Amino acid sequence: MAKPLAVYLHIPFCRQKCGYCDFLSFAGREDLFRPYLEALVQEIRLLAGERPPVATVYIGGGTPTLLSGEDLASLLQEVKAATWLDPAAEITVEANPGTVTLEQLRVLRAAGVNRLSIGAQAGQDKFLRLLGRSHTAAQTGATVAAARAAGFTNINLDLIYGLPGQAVAEWRESLEWAVALEPDHLSCYCLQLAPEVPLAKAIAAGHYRPVVEEEIVAMYYETLRILAQAGYEQYELANFARKGYECRHNLFYWEYRDYLGLGLGSHSFLSGERRVNEEDFPNYFAKVAAGEEPVAVREKIDAGRGMVEMVMLGLRLTKGLDAKEFFHRWRRDLRGFFSPRLEILLEKDFLRWEGDNCRLTPKGMLASNRVLVELLDVHL
Ligand code: SF4
Image (cartoon, protein in one colour):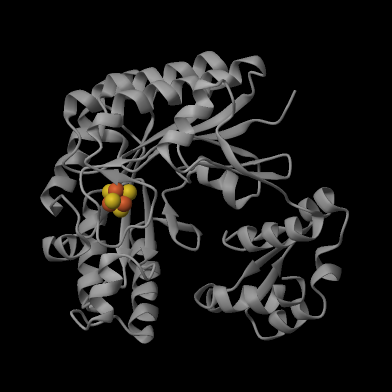
């Protein structure tokens, strides 16, 4: 039997477009909710012939919770009908505070959704306003309480640091606020802005003070310190969990395993082929209506590129990259493939071996981008 997949379903709708966002999502397109759901169901049904085994499902966006609990539950039902969904599958829905009700969460929980990922982003309303978010910190607290009341025992909060004008003490305050909500998992990302988004333009125009590198470093160390103290284990550069609550879906990406993306603009990685779905609605609708996979781009990943990608993703994990697994997959020795750069980075204490695993040291984690560029330079 084929290896189980991680399945991602994209819901490309939002209440309003946040000032830092370059994800594929659209505000004010309620007219497309129904046709899009119908097309997505058609795309899911294309799987019924093969019925692949599925280990995790992630409904993300966008803002999936703009759709009703019943609509999301029926998508899940379609996945169950078209695949072999593991009865113990991790099933996540992304929820934005202010867009969810207790009733809707109860419907999701009853439909088998067992993990909720909440876009909290910051604990202070002034930063939520700056980001262009449509919710308040109090609404995040209310969403967590409603999720617990609906029976969710696996809750993630997304947070962003390095916000324009943010002091290290304010980030600390956000972390402590989030910890007090007792989530099971926290994702803490440093703000990255594409040049065309409104917040990047406002910074370029001098309306906000960008955070400097030393502050980012201090914020990262505060993240490690506060979350470790609160009992969360770092398992990936930006991800922290109570024991046993690591995100199984995202581990598929970092462990370079196969995943299938369904919906507008979704990405898949299947048997060494990367696929990207159509990114505009008319093309997506037309292909699905014709009974075709709505794929716009297919790219075969050769072994050289595959090895580089596996290293780039695997080193994000604190457990690092398993050299035996690397050999099993590519029939190449990890040390040999990256020699002599690997030895240099080991000597400089950016990387370390632990048994068969090569992993970033804390110093290496902080400079992870630079370490990867140095390591992979000859192969890029
Ligand atoms: S809610 Fe998320 S996907 Fe939607 S605009 Fe904001 S950041 Fe982008």
